[in-house]
Structures are given as structure tokens and as C-alpha cells.
Amino acid sequence: MKLRARDEISAEEEAAIRSSLLPRAAVPADTTIIRPGEELRHSTLLLDGIACRYKDMRDGQRQITELHVAGDFLDLHSFTLKRLDHFVMALTPCKLALMPHTKLTEITERHPHLTRVYWFGTNVDAAVHREWEVSLGRRSALSRLAHLFCELNVRLEIVGLSDGMYYDLPLTQAEVADCLGITPVHCNRVMQELRERKLLEWKGGRLSILNRDELARVGEFDPAYLYLEKRRR
Image (cartoon, rainbow, N blue to C red; front, side):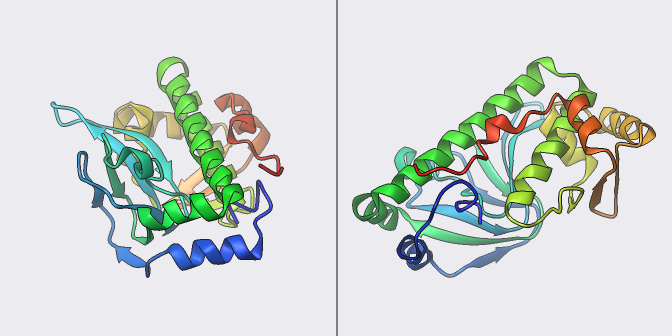
């Protein structure tokens, strides 16, 4: 669904993807999937759940640099890098599938269009990182939180996990705070402000957007960086 939202994927290409994946594995919440410096011979596709990339600081603080949802490769960039400079962790229970790098090599040799599609995906991934950098450097905490909720809404909508107004978000406020570069107490305060403005509700692991346009305005959210238009690569 994620690939076909932005491009045409043939039945032959879908078969090539499916045949390249090893049987799925389930991991519980708070499981480290990849550690920095590990030699990697496969890339990991997230089938279900929410995972993150993060870096630890010496004082014990953590900065989450991206959230991953179903349909995302957690480390497609490891195909060329062979090791990561950051952790990858399952924040919720996750289902994963592994694609050996040998199979990715076969795809690049036999399916040039699919190779371009995956290259495009890593470019979108970089665009998400740039947008998060802008949030951390220039947006207010309120705007950062609103922007994050808008982004997740669009990304989950692509894979059928949001109807545009409601989606599951079984994260803690501490985990969201680690995405925003603020404390959990500060995160709680800005969350309360979004509630008081009647822009959203977040309880029981379920996020309800009450005013999508105003939430986007507060978050200065423009989905152009997600490159949602469908075209042949």
C-alpha cells in the first residue's frame, strides 16, 4: 500500500518483494532491534507496530530521530552502509520481516524500476529527517507536537491505519517527548493546550483529531515533504 500510494507496482514486482522476505518475526515492546556498529546483512521491514530510531546521550537522555509505522523499512540504508550509527527499537509490539542484502542486490539487478522506487523511499525518509530537524531547531513545543500528530496521521492514512481523523497511537508521553526534544512534563503541558483548544484528544492509546485544518495551522504542517503524488519513477 505504501509503495502503490506513490507509484505503480506490477504483480511481478510485488512477487519479487514477497519472495525476497524471510518469514515474519514478532518482537515485544521496548526491544532493541539494531544496535550501532553491528554488521548488517539484511534490512528490516516493519509490518505492524511502531518503531523508532534514536541516539543516547551520555547523561542518559534519548533523542528519537524518527518514528516508523507499518510499511516502513527500518534500515534500508544499511544495504549500502552495512552498519548503523544509531539504535532501532520497537516502541510497541512489532511484526518484522527481513530482506537479506543478497536479495536486495538481485532486485537492483533484475528490477530497475523497483530499485528506483526504493531509492525514492530513502529520499522521502531523508525529507522526514529534515522536517524533524526544523521542528527541533525552530518550532515551538506546541507546534512540534501538532506537526508530529499531523505527520503520523498522513503516514498512517497511506497504509490504511488512519481514517484521516482517528488512529491508534499506543505511545507514552515520555516517548513522544523524546521525539520533540522536551521533557515529559513539558509535553504534558502542550498536550493539555491542544486539548483545551479542542484540536484533538489522546487517551487509551487512541488519537482523535477534532480540527484537522487548525491542527495543521498550529503545527505549520505542509505534507509536500512526504511526496504523496503518484507518478512513475
